[in-house]
Amino acid sequence: MTNTPNTFIIAEAGVNHNGSIDLARSLVDAAVAAKADAVKFQSFVSSSIVTTSAIKAKYQIDQTGSQESQLEMLQRLELSHAQQRELFEYCKTNGIQFLSTPFDSQSLQFLVSDLKLSTIKIGSGELTSAPFLLEVARCTNRIILSTGMSTIDEIESTLGVIAFGMTTDETSKPSTVAFKKALFSDAGRHALNQRVTLLHCTTDYPTSPIDINLRAMDTLREKFNCAVGLSDHSVGTHIAVGAVAMGATVIEKHLTTSRDLVGPDHRASLEPDEFKRLVANIRDIEIAFGNAEKNPTANEKKMQQVVRRSIVASRSIKTGEIFSLENIVVKRPGTGQSPFKYWDLLGTKSTRDIAENELI
Image 1 (tube, helix red, strand yellow):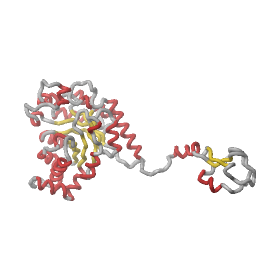
Image 2 (spheres, rainbow, N blue to C red):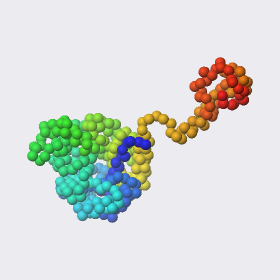
Image 3 (spheres, helix red, strand yellow):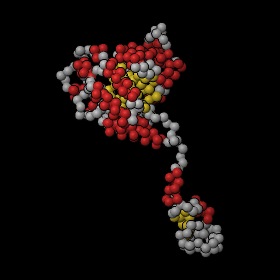
Image 4 (cartoon, helix red, strand yellow):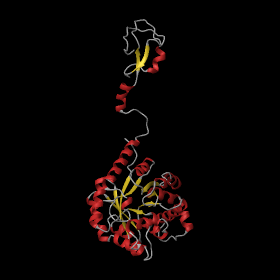
């Protein structure tokens, strides 16, 4: 059995509910059926996070058109607190963890104070939102942080804010100097190691394999001594499975009931059967990790007898006859003397009559 902990698999429902509570519940059902560990939505008050003039990303325009602004699009996709509470209870009833990414203070406080979430997922777009990150760090136990669009220096600055928030109270004055001091303090490093998971991410929908750069997970792990994972926006399941093989402890992948639905993220999402296959493949990889020892399995030990070889007589051998290159060879099955003894046997005398092809 492996001692490797299970990868935490997040079904990213996001805004793929299209503003419908019924569709949101269907996404929960699909995540449960796939045996994901959590299903994650997004919590935001649209007017708090975008201006009326904010444009949509190209991929959003491609999927939803250019007639509406980003604000109008988000208003269609916004879930009320009552709807989020309903989804939270629905997840609890169905045995799956409810998560959500907050984008504003009001939504954050709803998640941690009303729903009592102990883990908060922060999206890549908020990685430089220092005041918001500080608030998150001071009010939640664990943070999962996506790092799309960022440099290593930006991530370091972000983790400084988080370390400061996790190791000080509100009487401590925030500053860039204080953030750096917290980041390199023993308490700060311990807090990050125990409470923060960094998700490597490429913010492109969908992401081409050439832009994924899974080895960046190693860089994040080595640089910051945090658990790492992947927020995957590629097509298919294979990239996420590869990330697990490289040590990802968290996998986040978008889930939709149908890629044919209209909405910003459906095309870069997995459908229910695909997500089920993703989870199954990851669990297979975890089992395949094993225990690092190199020994034959029980089935391999049985196979040894079939496919390995033994020393046998290549022709009839009489009692007292000397074993030589002319009368012994190695053939299957592997139930007799090991071929490693072949040279020791040469030049010795047979103690009995041996038939052709009989084991020595």
